[in-house]
Length: 369
Image (cartoon, rainbow, N blue to C red; front, side, top):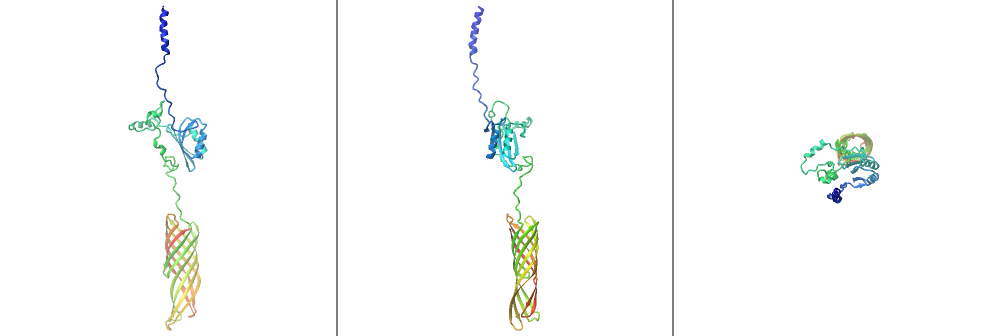
């Protein structure tokens, strides 16, 4: 009887054990995939890179076993490629590599998290503590709490890098101040525009013993601001001569002088200002038109002639560059010249001497060759 009594309870329990348990609800969806685009078996999002570099990196990542998702930017710069990567925990890695192959090896190494990437260490608890005081609703950028739930479940509290990260301007190494990816404040600016070393100048002026003149200078050789050149100038002047045989006759002479000289000069510059001096030696070719008047007879006589004599000159100029290209210069200064001439007047059968000294003030414009 006892066995018979227990059996119904046992038989009644068997169907109960066979019933399914409480409904656990829908199965949890798998964690959301990283926003980075998968490359091979690696989650590496190449945000910015030259096409050739991108292809090389994808080749290296094709067979790599990766443990970190990366967001990568590669910027060509002087000396190679600037590589900047941010991993899924917000850590930043950077390096300069010489070529695309080196970039591919480096990115593959970082994605495999081999510990050689020079990553920025994660923030400590003490460093994260001030974030707790952030105002309500302000995003706290950093790693999400360790949990099986995807980061999206925490809203904006742990969002990784800010949304403006992709829009951040990146500059080449050397453009950052000390402590910001480089030892220098800025890359050097464009090269300063240089003053020309050889110039041609044209000047006009007036003199103490001339009615005016024109001058042309050409610089042929310049070494450490020592200049060898050539000059050509022309002046007009007048003079009165008295016949040495008596005071009855006087002459009015109109002179045209053409001077050709080889010059040696030196120039000193202070920014766009300069002082230039030179000396020269050459030949002066003079043409004379003579008009005589005899006070006793009232007769007028005319004559003409020409003569070539040695000639020396010296000049000193103050000038300034004009225009942004430094190719034009404006200058002014005195030019001193001297030549001694002997003329013979046939009708009076007497010599006429001329000390052809002249001081002129010139204003000139110079142009680089």
